[in-house]
Length: 554
Image (cartoon, rainbow, N blue to C red; front, side, top):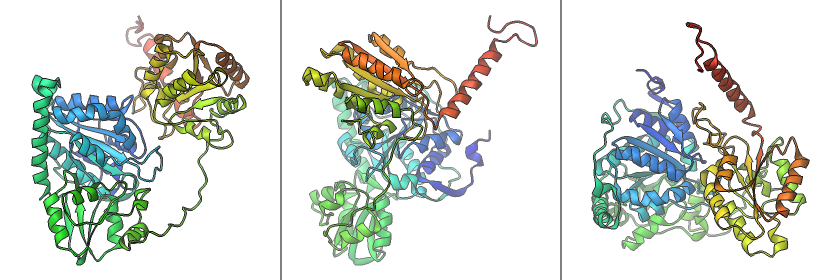
């Protein structure tokens, strides 16, 4: 059967995200799942466009758990998320290293050095070490394609999840990619084989599983010493550089004369190969974005290398910054060029909400999404923003301890996708441990995951492919949890009504959820088209059968 993937050219210009998707499709990956988040979002969208089976999960934890289930059945699975999403998935991730997999599972961690669209710039190479999971890192779109396939081979060989670490520049930059004719052996059909000791991580089974994991890692470390994923580029013996990912590309331009050890396997490190490399050059420098993960590991192993000064730990590296590191230049850097700050769209339905919060002097516990821009001028109507779903718990904490006059001004604000992602736990906390002054949660429901490009979520009733599916009701969830005051209102159509409603709820000692519902202006046309098509399908299915005159709805 011919698919979109078979029609794709054997050679083309692809972004790193698209290259991962193409490799997954060529590698007969049975399922791709994840949660949208820049810079990882386009992977599953491209995988779906190539004919792969892809789906958005409510959050990253669920995505990994679904992926594990499929991998336990022997399937090849791709799980995607941005770096902070791995925090959400960390609970099953650490234990998945113990259970291993029967098929193959690759987790894409798309890191965001410089915080182009994130609340922190954590370095997820730390997760590989902490969880005991192999990690490889590509430096180009071609390597993104090749390394994705290599990650599936590695996972299948050692029956262990593998992390493919991407960064923003590799995810979004385009370069030429050449596809393989036979990238992986044919995938065996999924099947279930009972393995209670290997899959049920009670302490009696987890202890030997941990020992087994460490034996696997020792074997993988030995393999990494001669792995073709690590490449030595011969150059001058006076300067040797160790680099991986996009840093390798900067190094090639900044110091073309240097000898370079390009790391493809970033955990477990090929320590002895690196020791030989460092011994063969007069000066060996580790160039890496983010934390000094590799430099610290090599220094701990007694290998003579230089790391970078602390000032270069922050933000993305560049060719000019690499040159400064090599020159040991610690003079102040030029300030970044001023750019236009982000702002809410002119027709965004959140404007009347933030205008009301500002006028009423509310203390706003905020959340992650495009509505976070309510912190900007002219509103400055957000006082905290920590993590996905944190607005509810933070707001409750403020209510619990503030004097009544201030407590009554506290509002938690969250988006529809974020509410589904991790706001539900906060809702349960709200019912279980209600503050004496009650609490008000505003769910800004614009019918999409707007910040990352209008992706679907369980509250939209539409799949990743924009097809109709089960619809999770936000107000229904609130009522089912035990919230009695649940209101749905269009803040654009009735701004005065919204302000009056909020004032009433703030004055009450009861718990309240206000769903401020109006479609995102960027997604509204597509949402209306979907609703029209869905209504037409429903009408067609309810109409009398043309062939027999019977009513299909009966």
